[in-house]
Image (cartoon, rainbow, N blue to C red; front, side):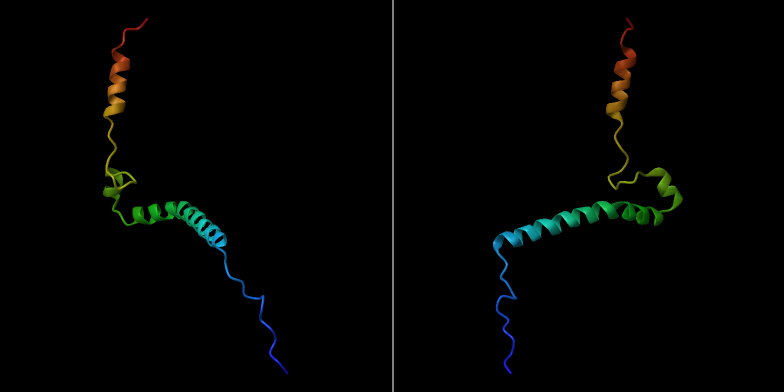
Length: 82
């Protein structure tokens, strides 16, 4: 008895198929990051003390800058009413 022929079973990947697979995995990775971001924020917040949660924002960049909003409010309130 002879061994069965395996020609045609294993195909070489073309360059286009490799690029498509790379794009597919990149898109799937982005969806995973988008889906897991709330979980990461929840775990990071659970490791903080209550005082840290009250005095900080969810981002690590620090408190937001409110000068733009306050300056706009001051301009709007200082305008003469028609």
